[in-house]
Image (cartoon, rainbow, N blue to C red; front, side, top):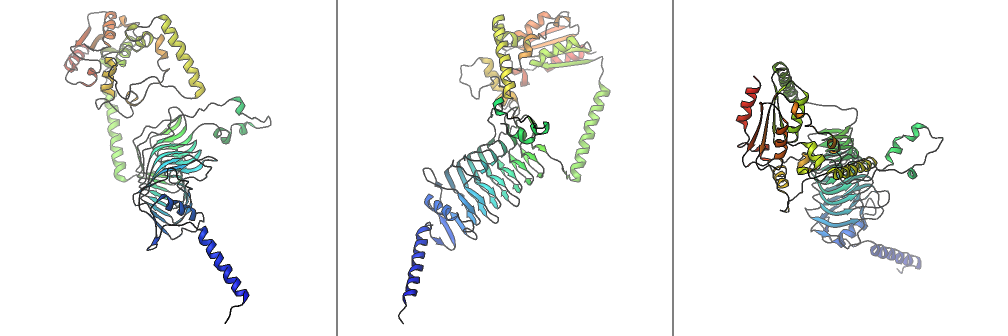
Length: 545
């Protein structure tokens, strides 16, 4: 039978719709066994285009078959993903997101039921716009990420993390790692900025908010309504609008979910700046179990190795054996304190001071006449070296200039809300440094004396901390020490003159200066074979009869 005109027109219309639809859909890699294989950056871009419709990926499995570089590629993030994405241990590198996006990440949102596994991502996620919910891999996570990693830079304003910006309730991030640099004003975490779900067995090595943001506020920034109440003027919103970071954590910036068996190894926070800073979570009112921190943690207020601020409703669940051990250790400590109080003979008190505490020990012996014997080993007179420089090289004019600069720095520190550091030890020697710098390096930067929390190993003193020493000569009354003193110094120590000059001030026949042949300043810190323990023992036995 011959078709009529109407049916022919309908058939033509249907065919044209099918043709136009097929032309508009992105060309994905061929499906095999129900799996979408991603071989190239073009395949990944096609996947992203398909995922513009939030239900498209539901029930689908995607397999990354090779490392992919997005450098120079016009890539749009995967807006919504609900299926399974198997990274196969491969890396997507060159990810660069700078457009206005919120949420922002390789995936903008992982929906409930989504599963991303064994995916490595490298790049920079630094969006414009509101800069909220920003993550190296996903902006907002309702699904599961497992054995994934991110390396690079993630920067935003709020809820910013190395893996996820926000890990929502029901979201799980497990066995994931982050490294590089993570920064934001609020809710900043090495793994997740804001966590309502579960973070399990994750490791962060990224630096989190380690750069200072100028917290100063000018009068032009203030807009005060005369009708405003005092409460309005000091509201949390007004405070948070200023450039002050808060809720910064090695694992999560803020967490009311669970942090389980996570480890932070990265530096977190900036010295004397920021609130609620922790190695695990900056602020927590959820559950934390078996988490560890090995990174340096800095901040201004509410700073902790595991949690900066633990909010109310804290519940500690301790095993009976752990409670028993804790009680036993406390009993031992109590016994030691009681024994010390009982055993102290106030007629036979002796003290030992090393380096800077050697000079302070002599000052204590002047003040406290109960101290019957004082040993000062490899002594520094901190007030003399601060006021006069090494080997008394500074005159009155140089000293005045130094005080002027330090006091100007105090003003800058007050306005900035943080302290400028003084020069510390170099990270590596060039070879032309003074011998005493080499000696200090050989101690504080090697296994002899290195410690990750030692300011001489890993940091620097505040620039202005020495100001009070400049006008406080602690050995001014050393000649009035009537009890026994033993000064010990190395023959080759740059600081030897401190002990020699102090010895000249001491009076009486119960004072002694002992020079150790061939020893440097730091040799008397830890060289067990040259520290004169026998001499010190006999000195105290004789002096404390």
